[in-house]
Length: 348
Image (tube, rainbow, N blue to C red; front, side):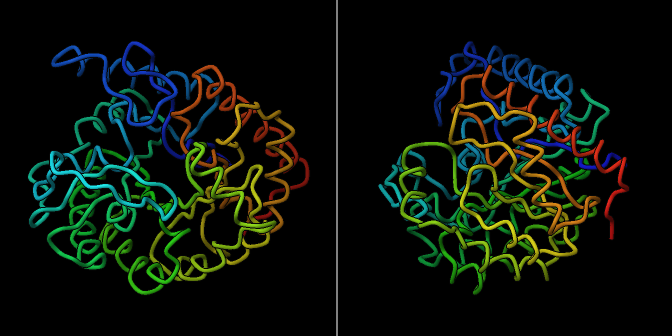
């Protein structure tokens, strides 16, 4: 697209209260059967409408048709038993009951392709679709079959590539892989994480993105952040690897975080999807808050490669808070566009 500083949402938006319990991750559906399908599509229409009227340029589904950014994809794969559950440590910070890999994992049919077609037909704006990344998928399961995180990740990468190619054929412009595990398992990122991610994106003509954040604004994540010190330098490990990778866009958390802004310099030449909206606080940013974050980032990334966004998904927020934050993102970005128009944008 030709829009300078195109805005987007990283992941989830809150679901309507008639569809699922609000402000809750893994919230069960309130509808069943055909009514659930219709309800999901109605929620998707609302998400598209709200993003458009609040000035979001690259529209997503807001994850309205899935309960969780990882497990909903896994539910559709064979080789995973959701009845046989184990408690594991997720992202090395909290315990969760997860399904078990009991055999070879396979994708028997498309998972999100029909939803993506629905999204594509409902808007003429560029659209983005999110998929879980291979390492994050591995970290959200108990593996009783492969007995190797790396082997399982490569299997998932192949499956994700199949899905991604069909999403591309459905008209998706940007395919985003969510890899919060990249901020935790730094040795694995170097050993096989980036390579598995590239396998998931192999052969795509749509733009590809990887989102690496510090998690939803839930207590387990905010407690973990409090242990990370005055500077969060995890990106220092992954950014050089991603800068030389085949991935087009790198998404990171910035607003109200302790990530040193100059780490963005490690991505020079890549597009940067910059989190300018905090998902750990219900305080609504002012347009100037957003603009200040973007001004700082523009010291390290050219304007034609900057995509303002949220830090992470906003499913746990009240809907009015999330939507007000979208408006702030758009308004703050407009301030910077006007400044760049007056001075002439810095481009590569």
